[in-house]
Amino acid sequence: MPEENGDGKKTGVLEKAKDSAAALRETLEEKAKQQVAELKEPEKTQLYRSIFRVKHDDEPRNRALSVLSNVFFHLHPAKVNRDATKYNFTWGMGGITFYLFIVLTFTGVLLMFYYHPTKIQAFRDILYLENDVPFGKLLRNMHRWAAHLMIIAVWLHMFRVFMTGSYKRPREFNWCVGVLLMVLTMLLSFTGYLLPDDQLGFWAVTVGTNMARATPLLGNEGPFGAQMGMTPYNDVRFALLGGSIVDANALLRAYIWHCIAIPLIVAIFLGIHFWRVRKDGGISGPAPVMLESEIKEERSPRPVILRPSGMG
Amino acid sequence: MPFDFRQIWEIASAPDNVPIVALLFLAPFYMWYALRQAVANDKLIAILESDAQAAKTKYRKTQEWDPKWEKEVHTWPYLMRMEFLVAILVTVLLMAWSLTLNAPLEEPANPNVTMNPAKAPWYFLGLQEMLVYFDPWIAGVVMPTLIIVGLMVIPYIDANPLGNGYYTYKQRKFSIWTFLVGFIGLWVLMIVIGTFIRGPGWMWFWPGQTWDAERVDYAVNRNLDQVVGIDGSWLAPIFHTSRDQSAIWARALFGIFPLVLFFIVAALLVHWLCMRTEFSKKIYKRMSLLQLVTMYTFLIFMVSLPIKILLRLVFTIKYIWVTPWFSI
Image (cartoon, rainbow over all chains, first blue to last red):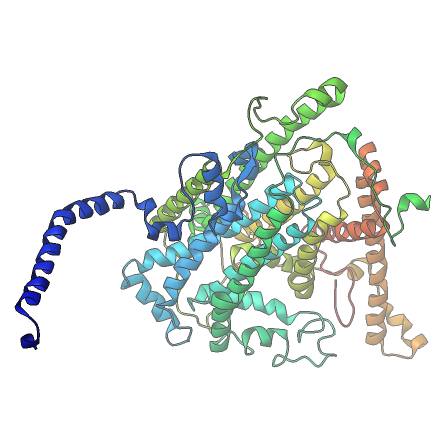
């Protein structure tokens, strides 16, 4: 409807647009320059600030905040005992164990992409991994050796905790959680042993689960198993294998224990373990040495239980 | 017979045995590493105990110390840089290991072809080795349970308040010896035996002996009642049973005595070990009855393993108590 508008009006709109375009042309360069310059300091952008909530300048407050405001780092306290940062006290074995658990989860998930837990496919999948999948061999090797290494690291971690007396009050309970984690680590490794479905895994698991036959009361060959009505088809070994021999069901059960059930349980216990390390006052030392003359009498007399010293 | 180096190499270089070979070096290294720090702390403790003034003023750690230093440092970067560094090192090690050594893969699983020797994964070889000395229900079920529970009760039965958070030997002789005997002397040693010594048929092959699958061991293992010569058939007319039946009962009854004797002797031995020093006696007095009973029970079961090893390997005695339902 141009007729309805006066010529002047039309010109006015046009000129306004021309004016603003000219103004934009003048400022655009400057604005762009300014915004590019701002991008050179990414930590000032909204995007960055939405992710990292604090500055990371090299000053004490921010060093503390960078630990406290990060979901992964805040497992740590903001500050630690100066002597605890050295390698010689902890040997880093707990941390190495946890790191290997992460490595194993990562390589394990990748392996799951190529693996079918069935008698027909399982062994072929391993051959496929070894020979055709890019880096498949490396992947399998890393998973295997990380698993072995994790067991060694767990044992050495326990050894260190024992040698430093770190299981003593107030960390008694966390030691128990640690023992369970060690058992779970070995079970994880054991269930994984069957999965390639080769002779090595088959006979290792056969030997291992045959012991379950002999469980007292619950195994068909165990003491009083027969009296409990146990047969090879209803005892505890049958429950483990999903059958009376190591076969397809055993493979599937091992797979599910290995890939889903035990890792979940381990993750829960890991959470408790780490949480308790903090709640029990951080790592135990290196603590100042205590002298024999400084042993205090127990503050409260033990309830219920007799003390032998009181028995004369 | 010539020393078979090839056999040793075959065992040590089997990919799944590499962790044990590593453990052979790692376990002694970290034992040395721990004891070295324990000795250093013990020296410090000796100084502090002999000098009351020093005990009040001296810095009670062997670590370097300056009064000007702050007691605590920032986790970032002082601790976390170490953690990242260790993570990188472990990754590099793992990469190198994975590039140079392939994970084992045997023939497809075949229930008709038995592997000889059929071995559990190396970390369970201690339990498999225990099968030689105990029936499966003990070696495979009771003992593992006792080990797990025994480890978990440690904090609750160790009444010694010293050595909490620092390496020491002199303040914790008993507990350290117990743990070393259990961990290195039994657990690790049995794994090493299971790996390096046990060949086809789970027979004992010394290092350097060739694993001969055709070998037959004419080991005559006897039960204790046979060694002693228990024959209960003369009881048959008294109890109106068959001669075989009465012999079984006589054996079952006889076995109780050596077992009870073992428990008494082992308890005395454990008690003697617990009371060897003045300090141990002091700790003993701090313990409750429940703590004592728990500790003695677990230690007695722990002692039973080397006793059973000795009886079997040296005296070729299999069972000490034979009953119709189970044998020990």
